[in-house]
Length: 248
Ligand SMILES: *[C@@H]1O[C@H](CO)[C@@H](O)[C@H](O)[C@H]1NC(C)=O
Ligand SMILES: *[C@@H]1O[C@H](CO)[C@@H](O)[C@H](O)[C@H]1NC(C)=O
Ligand SMILES: *[C@@H]1O[C@H](CO)[C@@H](O)[C@H](O)[C@H]1NC(C)=O
Image (cartoon, rainbow, N blue to C red):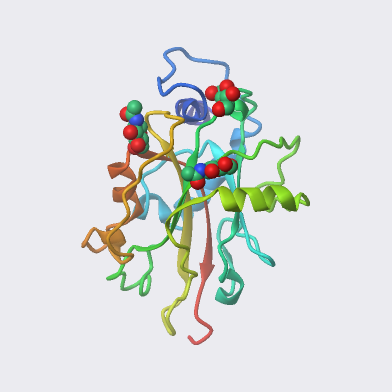
């Protein structure tokens, strides 16, 4: 219980990103447990899959991220065939707290997709491989009284909204669909959403990695974490899936 309380406190600090200010709270506020359990579950799955700490340092998500294609939805480590992942997915970001501040905030977020297992998890010499960077992602304003968790399969009927969100995306690196080579086992495809550390609501000017391999860092294992730090971004949400070539 004590452990849980301190984790929730960390989450309060991250939550400030969704608000007006980047200042961290100086006083302790009453903690809410109900919905934060969901983001705790995300963190647990990220650790189990060793995404924390291999890809990103430990963090407690403050938002929940739904990633879906026509037929499939990423649900924290399910396996999806590459053929279902060919088009850029629909992204929805939800505030997983009861905070009413963030729903009116104009902060925009950055969606990324990275493969830390290129060409394979045993031999990550091209890792990480950058698959996607898109800015200008807004919170989904709709509120859900009950979040269908831990599987974030929000199936929204409102297609107009989805279209709007897709077109609002400010692409930094084009979506390159997962294409794991033959006989390289399962790859982790990790979606991370970042927010500006300084809490700005202005348009973000982000650097474009010089190449997809190693996110342009030139170093094995160089990847999204280094890029995000360089761009003043902090992680706020995540989801992931596994995919492999049919030939194993
Ligand atoms: C968000 O932007 C709109 C229009 O630019 C503005 O009217 C509104 O006050 C802004 N909201 C916040 C929370 O800054
Ligand atoms: C950001 O998205 C909004 C719609 O959500 C759109 O009106 C705006 O043009 C987009 N900005 C950029 C820079 O893509
Ligand atoms: C805040 O951070 C963003 C993203 O790193 C950057 O583009 C922007 O210039 C920063 N704004 C201020 C006022 O420091």
